[in-house]
Length: 440
Image 1 (cartoon, rainbow, N blue to C red):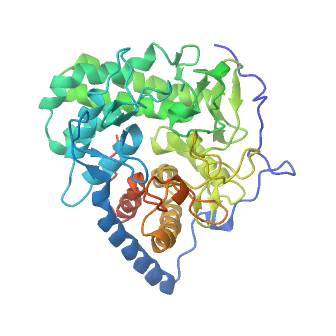
Image 2 (cartoon, rainbow, N blue to C red):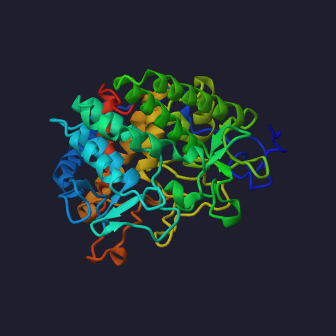
């Protein structure tokens, strides 16, 4: 296969300090995290209780009844959104499945609504409105979550009958990128562009039309890896043991390819890879950490990456949570951009912090994971006191809410977004010992 060129012709900001040596990590990130003082424990518990009470109050606003084209009840992000979005809907439904009592039916509804939104060319829309699938942007296509949603719904409902009925189509959709987005020399998958990844302007992927489907992305391959694991589980439950073995083998091969081609030992990081130039895209982005969320990397690598970049205020750590892009990156900013692209070039996104949190928990950084929850809890509480709800993202330098602003809301209201921000409750529960339902 083609050898890697000398790392990258792209900016290397975020991999070195201005003096050329790795920046000194924050003292908070040294193993292990300092114990919180007893009085702070009491304050933190009070703040947590307040935020969870608000989430309980707001949670019903993410559920919509079946309407027009959308045949089953569905989950919405809130704010100015009233559609079922692919990964938003998936993570909201996962949150609902973990409530007491559990509500896994929304994962089944999400799956069935996705299966009803197949486009004439066989692709699947990432966004479904009551008037039908959104088709205006070619990159708004379903991200690799379908098999995971179907598997989790069937497992929690203990009902595989409906899966048997739809299995062939689920498998087709979950593997369709093998013919279109698979970079054979590396055994890795690519996004069309950053817009398709959901992190709309992530510079680690980019939106250059000339580079479409050429960036083998950490996040893309982590999601596809989990799709293969979920397909293997479904095939096994349905007695399709040959297919089960095939999907398990594909998952193993993809895991090996990620660890062989996307790991930079010198920089201690996973990078996206530009297959056209055979160079790493050396940008410290949240998306580089998605393989840690998927649990597909060796512990010593994950731990080095966390210490050097994640738990380091020179890169991703802030008093309010964790940035989406290193503050050393030349593209780092905290502007409120949402149309046409929402801003993943620095702001704190709660969903990115969820990925970070699970990665921390997977690789032995429980105290740091608890500290992420504490910081997000305070961020949420300040926002709830400000406008009674939450926002999609926050300024990483000030903690101020960004989108949606009142000017961006069709109702003229600040905030209103809830969606996958609900996962803060799941993070809290996992710290208290609840299993991670998404573990495969």
